Amino acid sequence: MTTLLIYGAPDASPDLFHVIPEGIVDPFLYAEVDGRRAATVSVLDADKVRAQGIEILDPYQLGADELLDSGRSRHEVDLEITLRACRELGIGSAAVPSDFPVGVADHLRAAGVELTVEPEAFVARRRTKTEAQIEGIRRAQAAADAAMAVGARMIRELRGGLTSEEVREAMQAVCEGHGCDLPDDVIVSHGPQGAVGHEPGHGPIGEGEAVIVDIWPRDRASRCWADMTRTFVAGGMEPAEELQEYWDLTRESLDRVFAEVRAGADCRMLYALSCEPFEAAGKPTQRTKVPGSTLDEGYYHGLGHGVGLEVHERPNLSRTPDTLVVGDVITLEPGCYRKGFGGCRLEDLVLVAEDGAVLLTDFSYDL
Image (cartoon, rainbow, N blue to C red; front, side, top):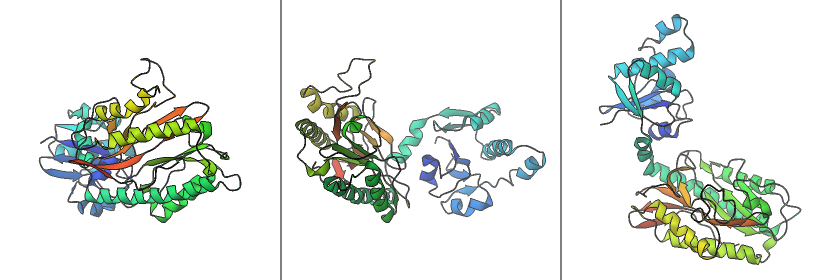
């Protein structure tokens, strides 16, 4: 059994919140070794951590009084407590995540503790979502569906010089009512803004413009995210011929990929499948661009990503290798864009099952 170490605070570390789902803001060492789970938390948070079945290594029992009385800084005390905890647990080597603090790593390594960065050991733990996390994601997606409905209505009616900021604020209020937070930089980008990557959108929305609305609420109780995108025509007008073409290609891409999502599916294959409608129509993709060049038109991004305690997490559905597993929650979000015009993106959230995909998004694709 591999020994694992995480150093951080559950409030800031998704890996640590996964094992200790509590809003603890002070960092500490968490260890898994020989079937034991232990953490160096103080009495302030000990009851919360103990309730998760985790052994408490009290800093004062590891000599914090002596260290504090010696005049060492708080940072130096924390480093030494971490080392003493490793010695108490008999840890001579351990796997750590890629974001393990370099200062802590240096101190442990200098004292002879061998650390190996093994991101896969930690990614795998979070891929299959727990029942509580799935419920949290469903709540966040329900908030997203409700907020998108409000945004769509405002964009369709286009009253009084409506701005991206006003749509964003209204959607945030809806998410608040669902017990979710919606970040300030969610995307309501209209016209040419829609072709500019993660441009959040600003200013008055013009009649007939394409409006890309990409929102990612987070459920407060579980701290899990949802993610969805739809594209609308402002003022309820008929879409421009170019936008309709982009929508047709994007919908075809989405439909093709969804039919192939299941446990064991190769993520690069899914990405390749998503590119085919665009390439057949002569639109550039990451697969057809000149190597070394930057693509900023056509279908210039990946197909999607995992969603959970982070809004962007593994697996990656793009040009890097990954394989879907049961319990993954992923986005499927193809799109097509032209600079100076805008574009179209459609994004669904799906749960990966053994023999297919469960659609979590419940919202029309209509422009």
